[in-house]
Length: 144
Image (cartoon, rainbow, N blue to C red; front, top):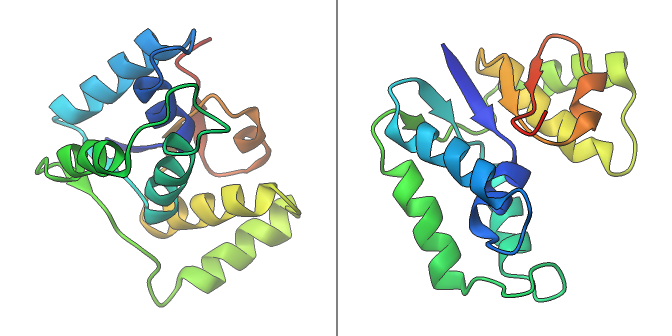
């Protein structure tokens, strides 16, 4: 079985002031330990870097070196994959868009779902309820 993590799980794991920190850290630690294949898609990684280092979001934002170090520690694991868009991605994204009709802030979610489906990933760990709007994926919320 394989799965992906949404940026919010990575962020909770890094934000020691969050009430979700302990569980977020547990999920990320389990992902790092394996053995299941974990897909970290580039939009998720970039969202994590953008938000974790932003002083308006984190009370104690991470330095760029800290955030990049966290990413590098994960992607160095042999069972963590970092695929991007392939030739057929646009068609898959079109299927997601025609089904869910995302606009505004849902467009990045649709992007991630398109990447998931294009890479055969059906499960996402996230606290973002918006992902439940998309068919063809299973949403697991570690905080429920």
